[in-house]
Image 1 (cartoon, rainbow, N blue to C red):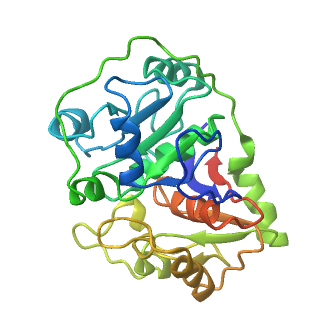
Image 2 (cartoon, rainbow, N blue to C red):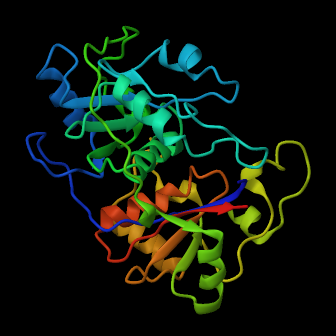
Length: 297
């Protein structure tokens, strides 16, 4: 089985910032909300697990990013754990049994509120959010703006690493509705049941990226799926990497010709930035879901 491409499906519900006592999962949480939850407990709590998904292309995310600065009580999350990559898709889906053990080792149980963030451009946190939902854990949120906004707000940053005292009882339960297969997309090309929205930059989408140094990266492959629409990833964010307002995001979809009342499949290349479509659809409470498609051979 070989992965040669990626798509994501958009979920259905928007739930704004709430108190931690609620049983409902939240799409985004603010830095202030998280600080208040952490301030309520001096020790690592089994009810709330904060995960830092920061990553470096040299594989040194833990050493060069997390160990240098992270949010108090946050554990490092290795996005590549349990993954066997391919030449085309280095960041493959994790092997379920291995990933179950890994998530349990982080102290995550079925009722744990997971909050994910990164210290970069949010795409790693978004991928982590999608992975948890793909494997059946919907009580997961993204820290809006990640470590960038947390630091901007002047909140504490530490180098101390918390210790997980007891493994969690997390179990993988694959949610196939969050994925689309190559065969699904072949059918969709004929019946147009789902809109395809590509989040790569406009030059890559239009097929005008050259071969000069630095441009011919996997996520800048030329061209797009026939009939797909384009909303470049960076347009979803403010300068501090917080998401733009609901109204601004609705305008992005409208300007791109996307009908938010119809199902959406989001497309990127590595299965990272495409999650922006998934999460913002979730935020806006629009009907229909949009899966992540893995082309399989």
